[in-house]
Image (cartoon, rainbow, N blue to C red; front, side, top):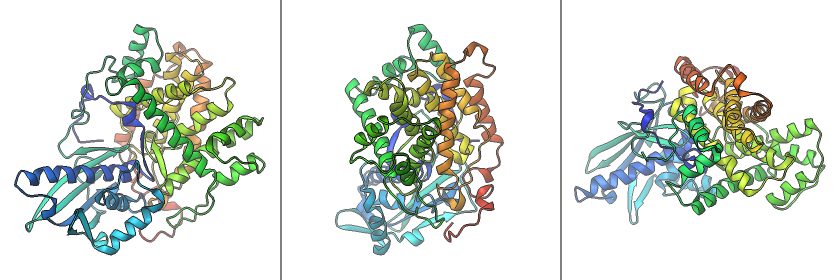
Amino acid sequence: MDTVQRDPAIESLSVFDMLKIGVGPSSSHTLGPWRAVQRWLSELAEELAEESLGLHDVEHIRVHLYGSLALTGKGHATDQAIALALLGHQPETVDVAAIAAHVSGLARAGTIELVPGHTARFEMANDIVFHIDARLPGHANGMTCEATVAGEPRSASYYSVGGGFVLGADEIPGAKNFLALPHPAQSPDDLLEHCTTRDCRIADVVWTNEQEWRSIDEIRTGLRDIWAVMLEGVYRGCHTDGMLPGGLDVRRRAAPLSRRLLGGDDAPTSGEWVELIQSRDFRFAEILQWVSTFAMAVNEENADLGRVVTAPTNGAAGVIPAVLLYHVCFSEQPVTESGIIDFLLVAGEIGTLFKKGATISAAMGGCQAEVGVSSAMAAAALAEALGGTVEQALMAAEIAMEHHLGLTCDPVGGLVQVPCIERNTMGAVKAINAAELAVASNPADARVSLAEVIKTLRETAEDMSDRYKETSQAGLAVNVSVRVPEC
């Protein structure tokens, strides 16, 4: 799999590393390159300052994309992310409605103003280079940023390793941001031991660890913001009709489904809309349709460069919001804000175990590493929210992941639409089923552990053909007729 050196003993990951606010459609192909360019510009400025130079001395910029970034970069909006990063926009705050204007303006200009009053040559059509037949040695998502200063090229390479995480060419995962935590958990067994020793829930252990990074108020505020973005994404998706961009002619379905389920009734805000859903009695089949609607809504927004939360990736962004909103709308007991925060804490922590022990990158492991991991995250969180034990929560994660093993990533036309949008609905439903099954079971009778499933995910990812790892070179990507000329 990943030839970048791994040392899982030194990884310290916060739930805010796993749940990031950003822009669609892909955390590895959009958010990661965005962050890589931002990091490169900062490092370049520091390097030049040591020579009494600055960004105003940059004459020309070029970005080279390799591997999966090259093969599906246009469909995944990698070029647009690079443009937005060079323009100085932040993924958390950029006006998503203005993205097309920002990008087209830069494309027309042919130059970029890195510092006020100075422009460097940057022609988007020629200076974002897609090397579709080459890859860098460390990861399938490799990129090299190059600047010409005084006629000489200066370059640095980076890897977008999934979920918006970025590594420099020679960096060891986790080493740069190591933090000694009171309850470090590199494996499910570590997490279980901490919970058993303290006689507490997973959420309690995570609360303690998170306070090494942030205050309690900062944790609450951050998770409220994450939930707000998730909920607004569902609401927007359930109120937006039309075709998704890219040429596949994929029609949005969440909005008409929502209208049909509510009999044409509606509410002016997301909060009132949730209350409207809660006020109705729905049949089991209709609740299943709501779960699918919630998930599709987020991923339709993601496909349209909307604001979503990586959970743990953009391609899997709909699973956790769908399962959490299912819990909010249809659980027998009211779900409080504290319950929502605990849900996100547990989901995030389970995600860290998969990142440490395997991968959350579809370019390295296929969609089992994205929708599969998100389903496991949601399943564990729901199981604990339903009153399940720590063992039952871990069992829920195992069940959900076990039944995603081997899932390929084969985006049609290089777009995060087919089969990605519907795949999130399947992941959400599996998570709910896994949680309910685990809470009704005795984990002592389980024949498969979460640790064994994480190991299997890693090994399956290593054995899987690269053609099925977000390259659009196999599976549905070659068997479905498309009209997408740039991919």
